[in-house]
Picture (spheres, rainbow, N blue to C red):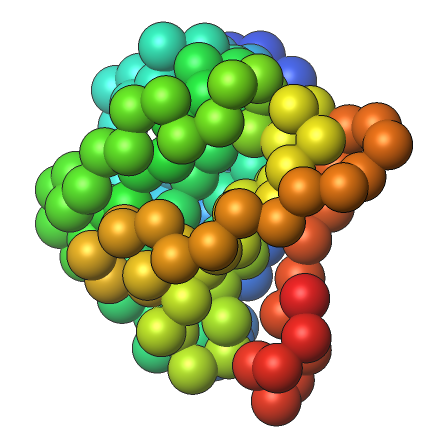
Length: 148
């Protein structure tokens, strides 16, 4: 049993090499777990609300998170340093985040009925996909990076 969060988990994902996992929770934190040498790397709250989703880039170097504070945050997985904060990324809860397989893009889905495509490193908004008739709860890239 892994102990570390003080409120319910909202997401947990493994790195592509299986050596690390990240978890997010309602306690406003994201934790990095080194599967080979537990316990976890400690963390302070990184969001101003529940962290609803998290993702690790395929190269294992970056994390992106999103949650009830409507922001996206990019972190360095080694140091835990905040690389980029995108405040007001959406106008409602960010429900899901995902990196493309090549790491060049990131997508985020939201209760504001949109899906947004971001530069995977700089965080610059590339495109907003509108037209959903309700909250968008999940997003994922195809393995060839062409479809979301």
